[in-house]
Structures are given as structure tokens and as C-alpha cells.
Amino acid sequence: MPPLPVVRLPLPPSAAHAAPKARWPRALRHRGGGGIEARGDGRGRGRRGVVCAMAAGEAGPGPGPAPSRTQMIMDKISSGEEIGGAGGAYSYNALKRLDQIWSSICEVQSDSKVPEVVTRVQGPLVDYDLGDGSEIFDVLVCGGTLGIFVATALSYKGLRVGIIERNIIKGREQEWNISRKELMELVEVGILSEEEIEQIISSDFNPVRVDVHLRVKVKFGWRTSLILEFRGAIFEGKSLSSISVHDDFAVLNLSDGGSLPCRLVIDAMGNFSPIVRQIRSGRKPDGVCLVVGTCARGFDRNTTSDIIFSSSSIRRAGNSGVQLFWEGFPAGSGPTDRTTYMFTYVDPHFGGPKLEELLETFWDLMPAYEDVVLENLDIMRVIFGIFPTYRNSPLPAAFDRVLQVGDASGIQSPVSFGGFGSLTRHLGRLSNGIYEAVSGDLLDALSLQLLNPYMPNLSASWLFQRAMSARPQIDVSPTFINELLFANFESMQKLGDSVLRPFLQDVIQFGPLVKTLGLVMITRPQILPSIFKQAGPGVILNWSGHFVMLGYYTFLSTFIDPVLRPWVESLPLRNKYQWKRYLEAWKYGAGLDYRQGE
Image (cartoon, rainbow, N blue to C red):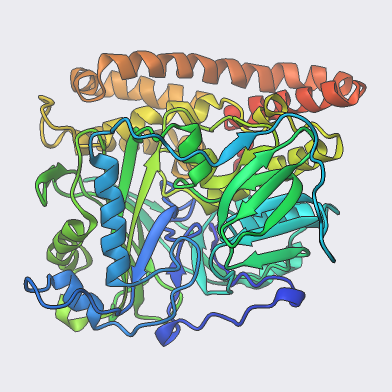
């Protein structure tokens, strides 16, 4: 098996809008998928960044209660300039703000009206003053951290593209774990060449292990850095206020009083996008992944990496019972530097620990996990994030001329940290589809919905998220989650790489899933009653429908797609666009975009 790369990306804008290179204190690097990045899509279960923050020394509140150990540790870290995007903030105050967001998610939902960001205006846009030097863009991307990938791909296709970012789109060193196939998507869309891909791979580490009282060793782990060149306009320091959608254009109204017209708005503002909040009517997420961790210096033994590690049953963190998982891997900033994550899955309807409470647990448990003395480490960065997910994902377009991409669309796996890997996996499909939609003026909501279609493999992943969440008042053994994971990984290991490797890259396929479930039921039938208790009959029944559809999509993509494709190419523009999206939905919805050996 070839190793799987990790990418570190300074992301500078075009030369005309060049931003100074980010200088992290002590040359630190941050793992993220637009923020925190916890794993490589091939290295482990996808956990990528959505809403993250990293601490670096901003002092906490004034006189009051004694500071927590978390605050004291964070106050010792050199401060640096906070910049935009997930992971661009790294202060103790940012941690408190994120905890406030998490608390608001867990609170009982009120009947307060969700702010209306997008409004539909009947008729064409008239009497709009473009002003001197202004233009109507083909595409305006809101959110530049990961949105710059889509924006760059579309600009390379000749579209007039602009990026709106409330902060500064500033190059910063940032690490991602990602499979080679996902990285090669950047080549296929024309952002990078194969030579550039090879040049950016700077180091590798192995072995990597899965350990849930079971050890699976896999050789991969790459670390890379690259630079993107965006060919378009950048509007920094500007926040979106509202969007008026007309028959022929959309107008973005900015918080500074300005406005920009375009043919299509791409919402890349993440899970907490105000547009997404409007579409979902402020509904509480179905699940949340809470992540805390550090990047620290002083690990003498630093050549291996954990995909997912769990050695304890459900334990208390704050006032909540949680099942804790770990991941650790060498960082790119030095030979003794290591990134360590502790994460858990929770149901926000039952609440969960605050991030600061999780960090307090992290300081207690991390030394035993990494076999180090905490006081001997130079903690360079504290990492934390919340990653909400919804069953109704990907999110269909709800308005004409407005499309969600990346985490805003919910395209990431519900057991992942969101972000970069899932975006690159779909980058070619999305950039081609968006280009065809804009070129053919197929920008009504129904046409845009085809770009975020139902994907049964993504929906089927919900059972795994539910099974890995500690749920109060459920009569199952405290060791059940570990027992279930052990049974699954043991079965997949016996079945070989063709079953194990796709799963570790967040790709659910019908054949490997059938084999794994079948072997688990044969070898460990006694675990089935606990699965029904943990997940609930409603979730199991719902999952069964997605499982059937996964098999159906596999059949369609394998046998029907080759027959229909020549016919599709002969269709009129609108019909051709629609059928191409159907064929893509079958392929990606069955996980058949994944190819073994990549």
C-alpha cells in the first residue's frame, strides 16, 4: 500500500491581493481541514476541521476565580496574530467563545425567529449602479479558508470569481492528512501539477495503528506543503449581511454598506454559516464531535502514529459520561514535535462536557497515553473544536443562485472532523458541475440541488456515529463501544485491505460493509442486542433503508452507468446536465469514486 499524504498549506491570494506570509510563533504548524485536522483520510477515520480554535497566550479574564490548569497552560504559550478561518483564532478567550457556542447548541431550542439572510425578489435586477471599475461576477464565494479551493478551481475554468472573507485570507502553515487520491483531485482540476504534488511531500511516518484492544498496523503518513494561486478578486475584512436573489442575479449586501452582484453565490462559511442556519431553521444538530489536543515538543519516541485508540470505558468529563478516543502523530515542525488529539462523540440533545472540561481531562490522561511526563513537554499549541453534523446531509440547495459547499453542505462523514479531505474528494465533481450550471444558466434551486444529492453511503455512516456516542439512560455495558469497535476492526482486518482501507478513509462501500457486518454477526452474535439498545430501533430501521439504497446505487453505477453514458452525451443541455449529476450521485453515493491502491 502506498503511504497517504498529509498537507500543510499556506494559502496566499493572487499577486494583486497578496497577503503577508503568516508567521506562527516558534514556527508551529496546525493540523486542520480549514481549521483542525486530526487525521489522514487514509490514516484513519476522517476527522477534519470545521469550527476550531487554537490557543496561544492571550490572557484570560481579570480577577475572579482561580484560573484553571487549561488557562494557565495557554497563558504560557507565546501569543500570535489571530487570523480568519477555522483554526485562525488561538486564544483562551476563543476557547471561552467556542464553549459559549457549544452551550447554546445544547440549550433547549426557543421559538425565536432565525435571522433571514437570503430573500427572494421577484423579477430581474434593475437600476443597479455598478460604479467605477465594478463588475458582475459569475461566482462569489463567501468564506475563504476552504472556499479558496473551489474559487481557484472555478477561476482556472475561466469564470469571474471573487472571494468574500470577513477576516484576512492570509497564508499560514497548516497540516492536513489526506489520501493520495484526494490530493490528486487538485491535479485533476488544474490547481497543481503532478510534479508539484510530488515536490510538496516533505516527510513520512509509519507505522500507523488502530488500537481498541486490537492493533492494526498500516504503513502510511505523509506531510506536505503547497501554495495555491487564486486568479480572481478578494474582498477582505467584509462580512455578509444579506443576499437578495433576483431572477437574473444575486446581490450580496455587505456589513460595511457595500454590495456585490453575481450569478451564483457559493456558501463556504462552514457549519455555522448564517445561510445554513436559515435553511435548517436553527435546528439542533443530530450529533457533535468534540475535539481537544496539543502540539507539543519533547517526544523522544516519535516515529509512529495512532489512527484511533481507546483503552478505557465510558468515563466522566465535567458532568457528562463520554467515550474518549485518541489520536497521535508526528508534527512537521520538528523531530520531537507531536500532535495529540482526544475526541468524543455526543448527542447535543443530552448535552456534553465543555471544551475546557475536556481539556482538564486531557491533561490528566495524555501523559499515560503518550508515555510522557506533562511537565517535560513544551506545549506549543492547544487545539480545540466542535464539529456538528446533521442527518439531512448533504444539504440540498434551498434558494435559486445559492449553493453550499464543504462543511456548509454537510458533505463530510458524521464520524469525521469535516473539511478538507471531503472537499477535495468532491472538488472535481463540484467544480465541473458548478461550471456547467453557470455556463448553462442552470442556477435555479432544483438544478443546484443536483450538486448536493442524496448519498446513501454518507447517510449509512450515521449508525457508526450513534454507536460511538455515550448515551445516558441506555442500559448497555460501559465497555460496549470498545467491544463493538474491536469486533468491527477485528473482522475488517481478517477480511483484508480491500475492506479495511476504504473504511479508514471514510468511504463506505456496499460490498465491504456486507462482508464486515456478516462476519461480526457470525463471530459475535451476542453483541447484537446491545447495538439495538445503543442505536435505538428507529435509527436501525432508518439505517436499513440507506443500506438498501447503498446496494441499489452500487448496482446503478456498476451496470447502468456504462450503458447510459453515451446516450447522456447526446442529450440537450439541461437534460445532459441533469443526467450527468445523476451518474455522479450513483458513483459517489456508492463510494465508487474510491479506487484501491490510492
